[in-house]
Image (cartoon, rainbow, N blue to C red):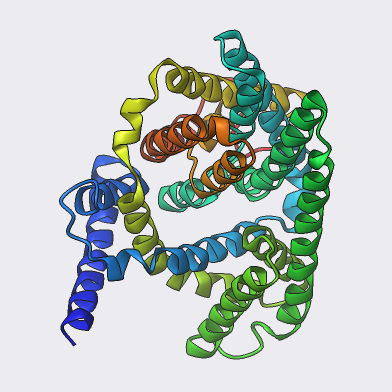
Amino acid sequence: MEDQAVTLIIFGLLFFAGLAADRIGRRLRLPRVTLLLGCGLLIGHSGFGLLPDSITELYPVIAVVALSAVAVLLGSALSMSNLRQHGRVVVVVSLSIVIVSQVAVTTGLWAMGLPLTLAILLGALATATDPAATYDVIDQSGQDTGFTQTLKGLVAIDDTWGLFAFSLALLMIDLISGIGDGVDTLIIATQEVVGSIGLGIAIGIPGALLTGRLSDGEPLRIEALGLIFLTAGLSLMLELSYLIAGMTAGAVIVNLARHHTRAFHEIHNFEWPFMIIFFVLAGATLDPEALATLGMAGLGYSVLRVLGRIFGGWIGGMLAHAPATERPYYGAAMLPQAGVAIGMALVAAERFPEFAPSIMALAIGTTVGFELIGPIVAAATLTLQSRPRSGATPPDSH
């Protein structure tokens, strides 16, 4: 009973911490994501150690639920009307950011003297993002412009391209070293993406037909919760990506359902409590001491990733004929990096144990930096991009 009481008290305090983060963030114009992550660092094992194991052990489940809700909401940005308006920009810019980030980090680290295999692996890690952090920055800003709609589409599919980039990196390493396992890795990645999209469609079609036919309030909220939990659970059971499946389900529903806006509004109503716990516990699991072990390789990786994403976004925006006022900001708004990068690092460390210490130290260390600083940069880009410019086309005019 005492453990249960402590757990409930801590959850209550965390919800109030989320409320405080929201208010402080609005006053100081800081992303509440960064504030919540910082709170987690302070109360987690790396700080004062105030969180019991019974709380931190819930992190995997909370993370899946929170990220699945974000994925469905990001999928809702992929409506046909939005895709007709921004689809070319979303596809071209997202591919450009992934490719330029991979090339910039790989060639830069190789030029710094790192082994080619390690440089290729770290280049692949640089393609991963944290869609939850970027999405929450957009949500907190209250902006609904052409730029934010495009940005939601970018973060929705970015990790899909990142997964393929990582698989291609493993294939390239295997070709260089004369090993054939890379082809199998690419096949597995393709099966995961295709299977996840198929699952999202299988859930999204009946969801589109049924969701929103009941009245507002509790019935609709239960439908939305059921959709998210079902998508996440089946994805885990089938070893698929709940991010891709959730995004696909959201895209199907937004394009087929007549009452889809009500359903997505309900997801907005309950996803923030999950996000509060998710970001605080994510902060509690970060290890800032890993930053001290990075050295020049970590600094080089960080600088090259930032440059790769900014120039990738600018080049992609130019190729896609995106508004000139938006091009410098796409990549900068997508700096946060979290769980997907750690997952890639774990796979790479298992495949290449000789590089495991370097890969894990750099992945964990830079994740700390990009998770704390990335949302601040993303918020700044939204502020800068929304400012009117004399003689320029308004950002939301396409």
